[in-house]
Length: 301
Image 1 (spheres, one colour):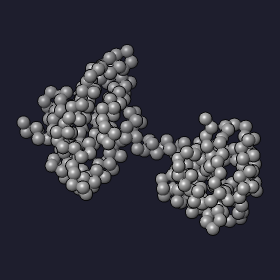
Image 2 (cartoon, one colour; image 1 turned 180 degrees about the horizontal axis):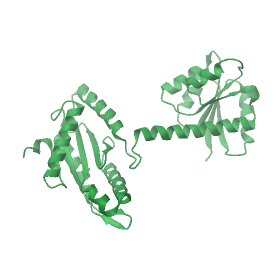
Image 3 (tube, one colour; image 1 turned 135 degrees about the vertical axis):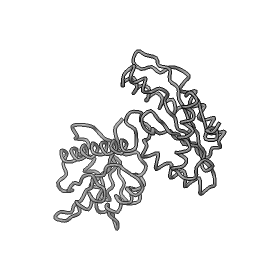
């Protein structure tokens, strides 16, 4: 399927020119769509259907710089190539500062320059997306990372306070994980981490979130949960991992979890305190022989 490119330009002749240039590309072929007003162009760009956008500077009484800013404020990260007839001005720098990835002078556009600019913008866009993903996701498991957990926890605390409803926090630790690495090697340990992450994710509701906390630990947020609900979720997570051995190379390794459960705000009314409470419960699960679920109310038992 051809990738779609959006042209936003109020001149019909420019549309015809760009369409003709597209037919002469020597590499990847694209599907071109055209919008001739600021409003229609912005709405179409925000649809998420396009791999890149060619954007004219002049759009009637409004301009492309304003459209770029509006798109970026709306969270749109589609690569934009700015088209301008202006020369000898700082429009090019204004466009790049606003968020465009490249610019072309209209009177100088030909097949090689347009094809090269599109290829550059698409590749740069892919690279930036990967950098954004790496900044928020754990590279090994694909789960959201601890940095995102801390942000999400702060948001969940704020939401819970605003609506007067609690949530559950579950810390999960892979039992005897060091033994897996020491006995079977780090590649086997990596396979265990990846598979545990997938089993945890598959066992949760859409509204629940699992993230890698660090090392062999994972953390799960369970919105609007009572202690009973959070413990049931934790038991389901433990069962999903324990149910069948995990294949690592030619080995099948039995894996279990220790899990600690805490409830906001009864076990802690700040983000730091609720994490501390879950960690205490996790320590109690390990002290009880591992392969079990403990909540903070059971720590003294």
